[in-house]
Amino acid sequence: MSLPTARCSLNRPDGDWCPLTRSSLSPLSRWHRDTICELGARQADYYYAAATAAETGERRSCTVGIKCVILCVLFEYHYFCRGVVKVPPHQLGRKGVQDHLEDAISRLRPLNPVSLTVSSRTDAGVHALSNSAHFDLQRKNDKPPFTEDILVEALNFHLRPEQIRITRALRVPDDFHARFRAQSRTYIYRIALGISHHSLLPLTDHNLCWNLRNTTLDVGAMREAAALLVGTQDFSSFRAVNSDMPFKSPVKTLDVASIEPGSSFVHAHFHRAIPFWELTFTSRSFLYKQVRRMTGALVAVGRGQLSVTQLQEILEVRDSLAFPQGMAAPAHGLFLTRVDYRQTDLSQQTSEEQFVSSGNSED
Image (tube, rainbow, N blue to C red):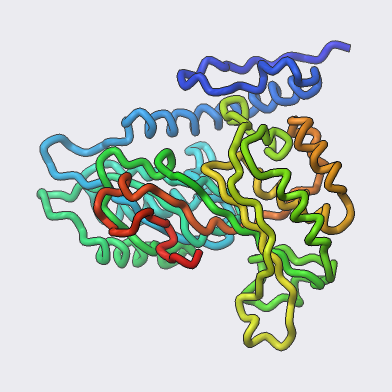
């Protein structure tokens, strides 16, 4: 039986790696990915155009001859149902974190059109204790730039109805780019043990962790499996299929994959102790749902549902369809905790050797 073919343009100017050309893929895998590509063409083109415009400098929208400053803001959000990225125009009535941030900036009445570039595009339901973004701001009548403190207060005033808060703002050089200048990103996944139903969690942890019925996990086996993920390798098996898949290389360098004890946000005051574990992952960038898939696989190892050898085999297959269905961890336990930049990319705004987006050296 011959499989149907789908048309998908791969002629992107960035020349990025394209999995549709890999001869090692099975015919079924190629057809599946081709079909996803075709079905998501409109959305892929929308996001690709936005990313290309930002990378090539088209994001500069200021009027020539009037003072324009480039600002970087750090912000947090919790359980945002639409995710962080700007929702395409054809999805009426829906807004992501980026949409709300741009609305707040627009209320400052800038002279230039508002266009925000976010460093880390988290999925719907994922939280961020510190994400970052940059934008141009040009005030009318050649007014002086807002001070950083006033900008934070003004934006938070307009963000009051949403679970989004600006934590810091700073002026950055003209060539700064929140996404492409980031040196590393760190995610933490929180797991609570011995919880048969989410109603048994403290309200402060509700929808902020993955509650498992298991009272224990084989943490030793989980750490052995996590060590297999560290380093530079092809993570095709740990990414989910999406519309921009043909344009992203699956080769990533995972610098940290650790598993350490955690705690409830109110552990000192809650009436009973709840065992928590935190899985930490650090890399310059991640693939779509990579962290949630790695977490789900490691938890499966801890539960005895998957052996260390089986996890290694999944990694070595290098095919997203090889990942066991339903094994990815849910979104609500995942936190983006920090985005790191070189101090030289941020001018002289801080005397620290390296700027950490959380602004907290303990993270």
